[in-house]
Image 1: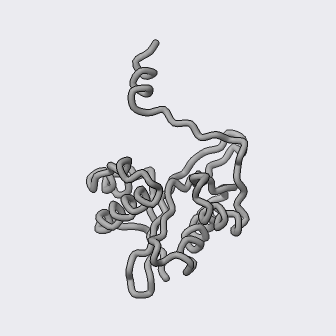
Image 2: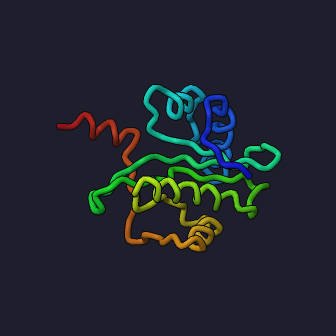
Length: 159
């Protein structure tokens, strides 16, 4: 296998993987990113997010990891936030997901970042079990919140 940073010619495959992930997570209608948005996000003038692709020996793209640098006030240091990791079903069980996480762990160690952090859907037992097998721990006491849509607009326009 080969892991590499995505390049601008990968926009279509990145978009496809994002849609496949959204479908797997039972939220296909939520995946609205356009090719133009994906290109600007990863390859624009000032990229703030990164995409790694894992390929088979034959050069087929098996999956991706989308991540960005975050910051912890508690540790006083940056870290990596893994926004998405996805391996196509036909390639699962071959070590591709683990290899993507190894790459992110190495990114952290090389830069002195103390952690990689991400969220997983609670019903996704195979993913939860996989992450635990790597030594990751669930932060069950934390609840993820999101402000979007009308609520975001209402708050933004308030005094």
